[in-house]
Length: 301
Image (tube, rainbow, N blue to C red; front, side, top):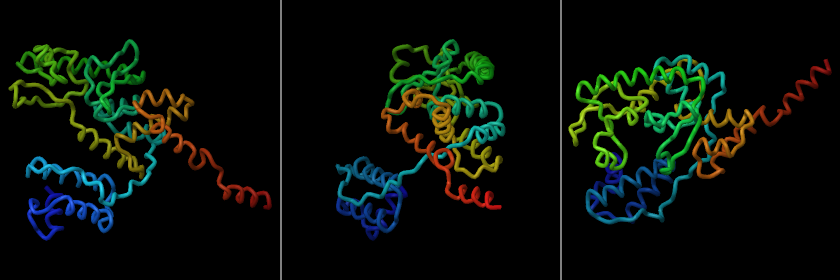
């Protein structure tokens, strides 16, 4: 709605039905040239206007290709040192700390971890099956040995909670695709429950079934932000920074880049190679000439 308002005001409050692709192109180009917005912001405006015309006004309009594209700057990801990761994790407690440790120890994305089911965690093989990850592909990543005991304790508590939910007539969980029609009672089975369920039971407005959704991502994001602030670390560290740190620390430890690619689920090796640029920066790859000056001054003295 905000983008539609800006679009209408840009063209002198004319109704969108009076405007077309030429006006859309002019607006998007103005965002890049005069507004100097980022590429993701401009793409958001494109999507909003396409939705307006296709789904609200019922007019078919293609994505405009002639507008001036905002530049997409190449940014290196923020990476924490192992000591910084330790400081942050020490300021988290309970389930939040377990979840953050699992993020760093497995390299999963935040939603990939929150959408884990009980059956996706394999303690015997020390691995985690990430289902329908980015791009719709499944992959396997490592289950950190350091969290095995704590994770088992957590799952026992989740199982007791699930048994209470079942006794109260709840315990349902959403299933992917059409499995709830193929297996009508599977939604209450232990294996399909979330590893990190929410603290509240909700009722599905369509089916009327009562159950728990997984923990909301904002809960962990908020705790992570507070923990980073408490440490005094000035880096812009988020939950996704733990994934970047996982990849970089594996490469620093000498693991093969192909192995890291598989663990992260990158389709292209070029994406994983971004972390090699981080390894070659600063003191890790180059000796500053200023250090040579300091050494020479010491010798002269």
